Image 1 (cartoon, rainbow, N blue to C red):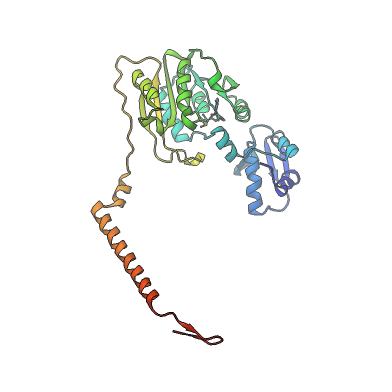
Image 2 (cartoon, rainbow, N blue to C red):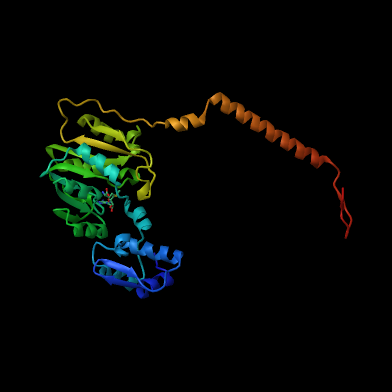
Amino acid sequence: MRIPTDVLAALSGRTKTDGHRLMLVGPRLAPTLYQRVNEVLEAVGGRWTKSEGAHLFPVHAAEALAPVLATGEVVTLGEKRTLAQYFPTPEPVVDQLIALAALEPGMTVLEPSAGSGAIATAAAARGAIVDCIERDPGYATVLSDTHVARRVQVADFLTVPAEPRFDRVLMNPPFTRGTDMAHVTHALRFLKPNGLLVSVMSWTVTEQTGSTTAFRKLVEQRGGLVEALPARAFAQSGTTVDTVLVTIPATRPADARPTVWPARDIPAQDAEELGNPADIAAEIVADLRKAVAAFEEVAAALTKPAPTTVPGDIEVS
Ligand SMILES: C[S@@+](CC[C@H](N)C(=O)[O-])C[C@H]1O[C@@H](n2cnc3c(N)ncnc32)[C@H](O)[C@@H]1O
């Protein structure tokens, strides 16, 4: 987006940087202006950090801000989400994904749509050797600067030639128009014969449709497992899309069980709130009767003779 002039003026005249820190100086900004300034700072990697009394950047704050000041343009997080399908994996989902992966220290892990590294960081913290691929150079830079990965490659993963050399593939790929199925299918080719892939995927893969048939068959043939994630698991990342965790071995295990695809549940509380269908029908009929009576009243009023108005006088009916 083009940055409004008042926001640009605040960014150039009311900020001071010191290494990775950026401080706002001078009189307090009006709350709405602050919000818009903060949106730009967040878009270039800044996070307000109370303990520092500053926005902290993964790189030098002045470096992060320079292109914004030079061009007067920024791609906001909202714009990035839509364009790049950037929805970072929240911590509870990362924990669940890592548990399914049965990671061991020293294992090699591929994160092929790594974003700024929510999954990669957790895998590295468990002693894994992590290679990352990310199409967006901005997120890739943020990830490189954390030094959690052995390698960060800026590339479109779908065009990266497969090499079966990883113990694990851990991923949360983009979902639009079934791209998650394309990403996961390609990612399976990077596993060693005894490897395991765990991916966040759209709920859509659980539904039997023309576009999911081949993928569902692949999961079933490999003895894959599918677990529903709680509703709104990604709300904090800006999407309410329903999601599942899919675990697929490189080779079907001898003791594999048939894949069970989860079904959508109506939470017990909602079911109770909906009540008995017969009561709901009776309520609808009563409401319709009330509406008909109201219409009849209006119709009756309209058939009465029209009121006569005397100019300059009060209305006489
Ligand atoms: C849903 S986000 C997940 C980010 C990260 N995996 C996480 O869990 O926090 C998807 C990421 O995939 C990246 N992406 C989209 N298409 C890609 C592609 N073809 N190749 C590599 N990365 C891609 C986006 O830039 C975005 O960072």
